[in-house]
Length: 295
Image 1 (cartoon, rainbow, N blue to C red):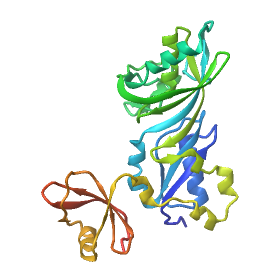
Image 2 (image 1 turned 45 degrees about the vertical axis):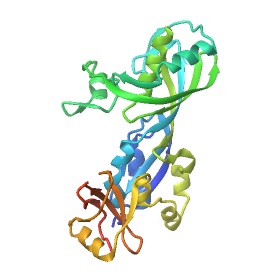
Image 3 (image 1 turned 90 degrees about the vertical axis):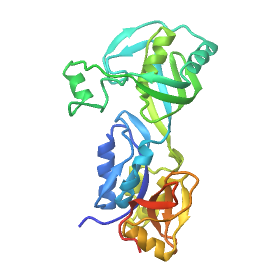
Image 4 (image 1 turned 60 degrees about the horizontal axis):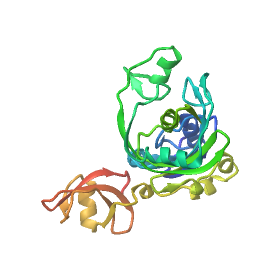
């Protein structure tokens, strides 16, 4: 029998695993009834992949919308059909640049920019992922989207390979960023390697590998889980009275004076995390998304 188990597991996803494969593996290791991940990480990418178990899946959207950080390795001078090292070489050019020129180019991508999603992506067109069309040699017109690059740091230059650290908004394709950097430099480029180091307030340094989890007892695995409300860091915390908790459980609003209408974290008088509430400016607080089995 699958277990009712709630929490967030921070996985250091290995290369070669799709996000869904990694999700299924973690779900199996916890024998969890319900699980979901918080944003796709390509098989060729490694790093932080938070996995939500049980009731935590109700709040996973917050990490889908969160900012993320990556360490990207970019091969300059070579473009490929997929924008990464798994594709066929399309063009090769000599790379002539210095560190100052490279840093100036990287600065141009900081701020609000537009990207055209790559064909080799999980975005869907008429219910079918774009990468399936790409494998059939079909090009689908994609609309550009606005994303934000908060910072790019140059970590290393080694011959024609550069390593950068990128802090960006949701919806950013690092593969596309790598190609655009190569195009701006005039030599072309593709993404050689990618590691996600941060999602929201979670860090890769907090994550565990599949191998580490396999070597643990079930009790130790459970201790490795983060609580559900770790997904909601940054939201105002509100403690409810016993009567208010009962009203919220029944789907009723309670009196609540708020200066804004931002979501809040709700806790019962005993300290149990209850869920998320939505205040209005007329002095009410409504239940928005609650966990099951509130005591």
